[in-house]
Structures are given as C-alpha cells and as structure tokens.
Image (cartoon, rainbow, N blue to C red; front, side, top):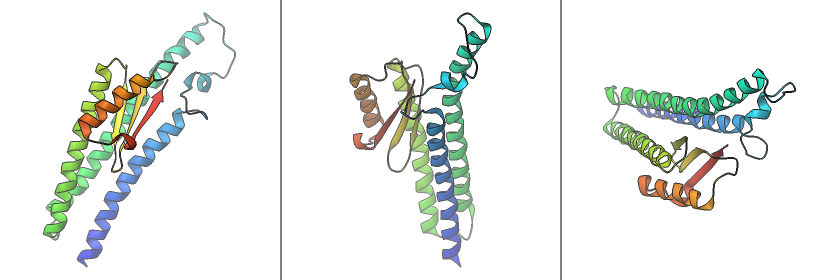
Amino acid sequence: MKKAKIFGKRMVILSVLIVALSAAVYLNWRYSGANGELNLTSALSGTQKYLGDAQYVNQAMTSAKLETDFFSKTRTEREATRKKSVETLKEILNDVKSGDTVKADATKQITQLTKNSESEVAIESLIKAKGFSDCVAIITDGGISVAVKTAKEGLLASETMQIQDIITSTSKISVENIKIIEVK
C-alpha cells in the first residue's frame, strides 16, 4: 500500500515536471520559425503595409511587446510550475504516512528546486549585465536552456562563450548540457 502511494506521488511530481518541459518546448516551437529564428513580424502581417501607416507603427510596437511578453510569460509559467512542484513535495513532507526515505527525498528535491531557482535568477541577471536586453533560463535535470534576446545578426562566438561561462560558473552545469536559444 505504501509503495503504491509513493509511486503515485512520484508520478504526480514527474507529471508536473513533464508539463513544465512541454510548456517550454511549445513556447520555443510557437515563437520560432522553420529555421529556428524568431519571426514575429511575418506572423503578425496579414495585409499589405505602407511605411508611415499607423497600423505599421502599431504592429512594430506589438512585435516588441510580444517579445517582452514571451520572456515574462515564460518566467511566470516557470515559477507557477515550480510552485506547484514545491506544494506537492510539501504535502509529501506533511503526510504522516510518508516514510523517512520519502521525506528525505522530498526535502532533497525541494532544496534542488530552490537552488535551481536561485541559479536561474543569477544567470539571467549576469547575462543582462553583459548587455543583452532580456533572457530567461530554465534548469532541468539534464541541463539548462537559455533563451536570449539577440540582434538580427544573432550571437557572436564571443557572446556565446560569455553566456556559457556565466552558466558554468554559476550553476556548475557542463557546456555540453547548455542550450542557448536566440530570440531575435
């Protein structure tokens, strides 16, 4: 009976983490074109535009707003998912039927989620300090994905190395487990 409850709770935690990862993959797919580049302008254009039209100016402003919304929405979803995971783990800790091993595992997972959250915030702040206008970092069990707002030219090799250096020094994640996504 205990094993079934433990297995069920672990499945809930695993399901929450899968939903978070799926949301990140969906957002990446949704805002990226076939070649992996962000192309919000073409997604918004449905009619012919003329330079100077009020509609053209508004769409340019909408494009910038959508890019900002992408980063803020991703951060909000990341935090909401993490909050649900922590709540589930706290329920396990408060459950009198949970064994010591399960409680120790739940405590370890809460600690890891907290460390990941702190690392994500530090990484985002340091990347912005290097001159990037916005970014969002998501640490998973296997590594980290960082979406960085870049210019039309994309990231230079030196900028990629700066981002990798920030991540490896802040989170101890190895370079081969770092995925940098350019948001143009």
